[in-house]
Image 1 (tube, rainbow, N blue to C red):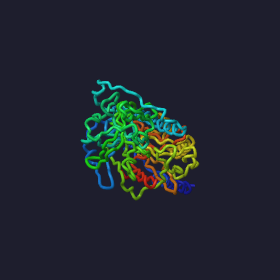
Image 2: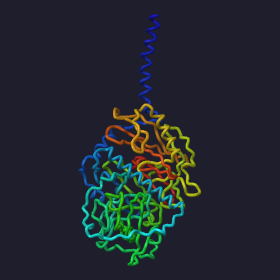
Image 3: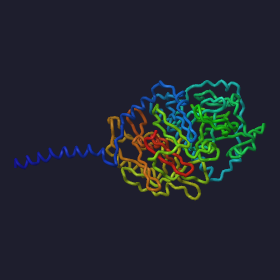
Length: 486
């Protein structure tokens, strides 16, 4: 009996290390990866710390140009103006509110296009210049949290530099202009057309004016434009041509832009917007770019990356078809066929991500949306699978639009399931944990950074794009994703 008990004791001593070994080795399982919780929490603290570095001169100097390619720096909003929210949770709520407005805007654009809405029935809002508005003080725009990214663009002659929002979901590039009827606060002085020798108003019969969705004629026979963003934000003013510059060298003349005298909504901080969409008036189309690419750094980072035109995409890019919707040329659709979690393909029909004959459906890549939106059925399948693989993590309920959150406050690192996008041709893009688990406060609460949508349009947002160079090959209708190329 004593020998039998000794045998059992030896078995138990041997089996314990084996169990421990299996537990520790699970982090190296090909279908899980390690998430650096501590580093993510540290960034939530740093982003609310007062800025100690100026990015303006760096942005100007870092731009470079040669005969075939152009490159300018990209910065997250937090690098331009430090948020002044009371804590990171408040900043996150502000970001999510703005993000929901962004999604509503894109959905509205597609809805109008699909329902044959006649834009000629719309006319720009008439505004009056108020002298007191010309002396608007410049203060931080950080009260409006945002997932947007900025670059530095030169306008006019002599050249003056302005921080502009990047937007792949728009076709009209515009800037706030003096005199202001109603201008929001921005970080740069407001652009003055009278101080530029290359500024020229477009006439009502100009081809660029005819290409506008909403236009009208002023009494001077100059073209007026209006762009509305579906969330109540809008810009109204003159449509004109101007010289656009990238850094100290490399410029394009007679680029059609909006000169906004009445601008309202959620643009606070930027001088205007660079339209990178697929329409005839977008900046890439006007400068005849065969391609462009960008890489977004972490939105809580103080570092920068680049926006490149006409540069070769990285050789290790995951290539997918770049699709177009004949009912809405602005958006860049991608040939997504499925999503996998923990190495297992989810049971989502490929048709969920496809544009149907009416122009409805499909999934776009968007620079301005932060959180990826999936149709309800696709999202529910993704969420349920993710929850199945994260039962070892403490649940933390919900947060705003996020319904799957975890309390990782007691962990420095956590093992999480892999998550990948799969594209036509069998290509897969594995996401880093920080692309799908994001902090919503500074106390260790993290949430799955996907959300459902009742609309037909799905969107790959910039949280899922962070750290990946996204290349749009306009000449060959391809989009490339290359991780770790910022």
